[in-house]
Length: 392
Image (cartoon, rainbow, N blue to C red; front, top):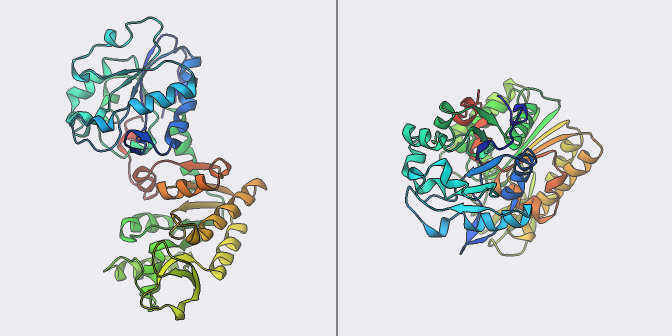
């Protein structure tokens, strides 16, 4: 991929910048600013190069209709404060505007176009819509890795009409993921959570040949415990996945990859209830497994201490309740301790993982934290991402 750093002259150039500013909103109030913070480097880079910036992004799923609650306005206001520079939100119909409409005032340097998903043509990857978007700028930059698994007009087809480059964040994301898929330092440990094992089977199959250990936590671990004939009480699990789990154990055995799952657990009678430490043979019918136990945590931390590369996707328990977040917090702290001694390269990804890292203020300690969800997982699965291939 050509990178934004490769562009010789950006002075007064109009840069169409695709970002992922799909932040959580409640009554137009921003609940998490992580994705805004992540795009600051590319914004500051372009400001320094004296470029004219036209930001393309989306919030939520408006399904091709104007939804005022999903306006980019709160993002603009937040970003203005962070960079201490005026930002114009352009709310007129994108399909009818011309480039001269965007920078009427000579001193204007940054324009945000209203939610690109207010237009059905975006998700349809409409060629004419992409061609029109391209007329607004001189250069296209994709710095939205987390949208790059989508064949959308502002991600994929737009590159057919403009010189196109990878942004700082996208380049960093790809480089980091290459370190755990191709340029691997062994031993490698993957800690993987989430509730549905079927949604991540492709990733697991792709990683097993290259990884030394895969640790199952959260709802995924419940599936394995049930497969191993342990009682899981009323814990969350996925039905009809016995063949998938059997396949995981068969592939891992062939590739000498260890599969680790809880030896002991923390249970509660309800999600907001009190924690109780239990062995696997002590789980009652009204128990919910909501965290890993002390023995399991010790084993996971020993694996982290002996690994050179760590991939973490998914908390170890129900981390929304502090009573069941200890396993996740201790795993995070153990990884950070090893990062500080330069003994491990770590990547964390997924919204729930990011949320818990923010809670204990260690998000900046990790070597790389991916804000991408689907794109992160599809890359690990070995799939071709349309937004990445479009830049090549």
